[in-house]
Structures are given as structure tokens and as C-alpha cells.
Length: 522
Ligand code: NAD
Image 1 (cartoon, rainbow, N blue to C red):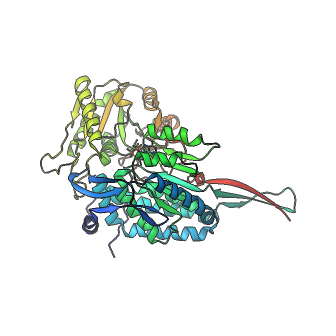
Image 2: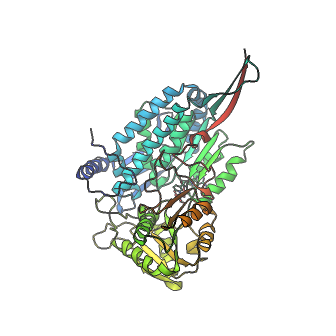
Image 3: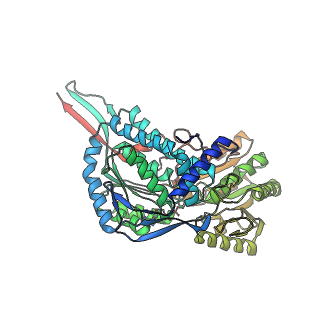
């Protein structure tokens, strides 16, 4: 059996030789999978009638990872029908049985973490520790939701009684067939998390992964299958945006979780509700996340926290910090420290042990970066970075970008407004905390926000006024690094999240359930 380590996003150093050797073994195993042709799965049966698309590695464009059969309209119809038919059976299955099979799936994910992480590094460019963290988070999210179902006795609670002959009970019950549409940047955790919550709650699941996460999703599917999950309860529908749209429009889908960009999420939110009666839809969307650095801050801690948040996964985390407001008298010092850190980060092949910054996901992302850098050069300053490193030096032929810090742009510039999802952070000065808070909150989004100050009064003001779902103060590890089920739940406010209940948090799994109040007279 492979060696297995517990890695969270807070695992800061990678100097554990055993961990590295275990990942290397996982990489050898995952490399042996390359070239696979991946079908969808409906009721456990492979579906290969759909058009093939090719998945290549963003870190090495000469590396073809797999070819995938996109689900056809008939595959979607069959899967929704089977999921809807199986839903009453799965929903009535006593919760200890449901939870047992899901916990077995979580254990398989943990057992296979090295090869799953290595595959993820190849498929979405995540570095070693980030990929291991994503896999472990997937398993822990499932475990956490199972524990919540267990702790609440399957969300059954006795209520008061107005008459001694009446027995009143509140029960949370599932909705039916639940679609999960996931993004490229957390191909395990944001597929397994919502799917795990839906399944633990007693819904059946239709998973539509990101095209650039298809291989990882197929391996996740295998974990549920190998754990013995009823094949009618979990269906895999790979494909592009059209496959997702077919699920959103399907009348047989009773609930839906989408994680992805704001524009797509909002259109799904509007469309899914308009089908006769309100249906639950959870949309977790983008971020344009600020950090505020006061002149009372430890500037080294602030620079470390911002650099980790801005450049981890090449700026492609929904939690990524992309704009920093710095009190004017420390602007120069802070910017110099941030630039130094940015310049010292190792950009490289994400499967290599030293790389912190891997590639971005696509040529589109490179183009967004180039446009922003060109604009910053014209209207402001590029303090460090700014270059496209594709094939530079010893780098493979992939979408590598230099971690970039820009300044000198007005605070209402589009670079402070649009989610770019690249390793670029913009810095601007402020004079009063009030002004900084107004700037930080001046966005339709509200995912993460950071604050650096040694002044407790300022910290209180920040915590009271900031409009974001995940906030951190004086944290050298920055945003999300360390977010973990049952420890630091993760979810957005405003345009960053329609559910308003954080994943891995106290109130998440209940969103997959509806209340039934039962009165029985003896
Ligand atoms: P995306 O919106 O392009 O795609 C997400 C998923 O939606 C993919 O599976 C895609 O195929 C599908 N899709 C696209 N158009 C669709 C449509 N019209 N109907 C149905 N499905 C459709 O996002 P992405 O590029 O994969 O991911 C990056 C985005 O996700 C960023 O904006 C990031 O901030 C966000 N994100 C948010 C969170 C969070 O927790 N709030 C977490 C991770 C990523």
C-alpha cells in the first residue's frame, strides 16, 4: 500500500523526504494512466457515444493526458432519469448505511492521495502540496458531512407538543436528483465536497466536472464506485459548457450546486429557479479579493500573507488576493517586500518538488495576463514580473507566468475590479481605514478579505465592516491556506455565493435538505 501523509493547505514546507518519495511513486503510477480514453458513466455503464475531446497538460503542452467522451443529450437524459428513480430508495436508506459507504469512499480517496494528487498536478497545474491538500480536503469534506448527519441522527429532531396524544418531529429530507457542476481549479474538493454533501443528505448525484478536470473526476468516480456506492446513485457526465447547460435546463434535476465564474453562476441561478416552482440552487462564484495593510502591521507578515494568497496556484484560487490597499506611509516599504517575495518564488513544472508557482490553465489566461500587464505598463508601473515564461530557461512548454506586482493605477481601474485569475496583484495607497474599507467593499463580489494591523481597534473595525464570507487577520499563510472542513469553512457573500453557507461549515449540508414537520396523533 502507498505511504500516506496528511497534508492540508497549511502545510507550509515540503522538506519531508518520505512525503516527496510517496508523491514520486504516485507520479509514476499516474503517468502510467496517460493516454486513457475516458467515458461517462450512467448507472455504472460506460457511455462512449459522445464526441471525443483531448485534455493536455497546461504545464507541458506536448503531454496529452487523455481523451474524453463528452456526454450526449441521451446520456444526460438517461442519467437524470436513473438518478430521479433511485432517489427515493437512496433517500430512505438508513443514514448509517449511507454514511458507511461514503466514509469508505473518503478512505479510498485518502489511500490513493499520492497518485490522485500527481494526476491533478498534470491536469490543472497544481504544485505537489496544493494538489495533496486538494485531495485530502475532498476526503475530509465527505467525512465532515457524514459526521454531521450522524451527530444529528439524520437530521431528525423531536419537537414540542400541545396535546399529550400528539407527537411532533422535524425531519430534514432530500430533494431528489442533484447536479454538481465543478470548476477546473479544485477538481477533487469542489466535485467531491458538494457531491458528498448531496449524497450524505440522501440525494442522488449527477457530476459534470470541468473539461480540464475530467481525468481527476473519473478517478474520483472510481473511488465512489470501488467503495460500493449503488451505481444508480452517482453518475458521471463529462463534457463542456453545453453538458452543464443541459443539466441546468433538465426538468428532472431537483437541486443544483455550481462552482465557477460569476457570469455563468448568475445565469444558472436565474435560469434554474424559473422552472415552475422554486428549486434549490447553490452557486459558489468568483472573487476580487482585497487585503488591507495598515501602518501598524508587521510588514513581513503582510507581504508573506499577500504573496501566498496572490500567487498560490498562479492566482487561480477563488480566494486569491488580487488587490491590496496599503496605508500611504508604508506603501513603499510594503511594495518592496512584496516584490522581493514575488521575485523569489520558484516558477516551475508543478510535479517537481521545488515549484511553488505552476502554470496557468489556458492560453486565454495568458492573454488576460498580457492585456493587464500591457495596461499597467502604460498607465502605472510593473514593479516585478510581467513576463510570459512559456518554454523559458529550463521550463517545459507550458503556460508559465512570472508572479507580478503592479502599482500606480487609480483605485477605480478595471484591474482593481475584474477577476483576472492570473498571478498579478495590484497595490494602491490609502489614508484612512474608513477609505480602505470603502475601497475593499466596493465590489459585487465578497469571497475573502485580509487585514494586517497590530491595533486591536483597527482589527475590530475591519471585522465589523468587511463584506466577505472568509476573512483573515495578520495571517502569514494568507487566504484559504489552512481553510479546512470543520475548522475554517469556506463560502462567499454577495456575488461570490448564493447559498451564503460555507462549505465544510456548520450549516452547509442542510442546504441539500428540506424540512418536513410531522405530527402523528396516537
Ligand atoms: P467556469 O464558470 O468557466 O466553469 C465552471 C463549470 O461550469 C465548468 O464545469 C463549466 O464547463 C461549466 N459551465 C460553463 N458554462 C456553463 C453553462 N452555461 N451552463 C452550465 N454549466 C456551465 O469557471 P472555471 O474557469 O472552471 O473556474 C474558475 C472560476 O470559478 C473563478 O471565477 C473562480 O473564482 C470560481 N471559483 C469559485 C469558488 C468558490 O468557492 N466560490 C471556488 C473555486 C472556483
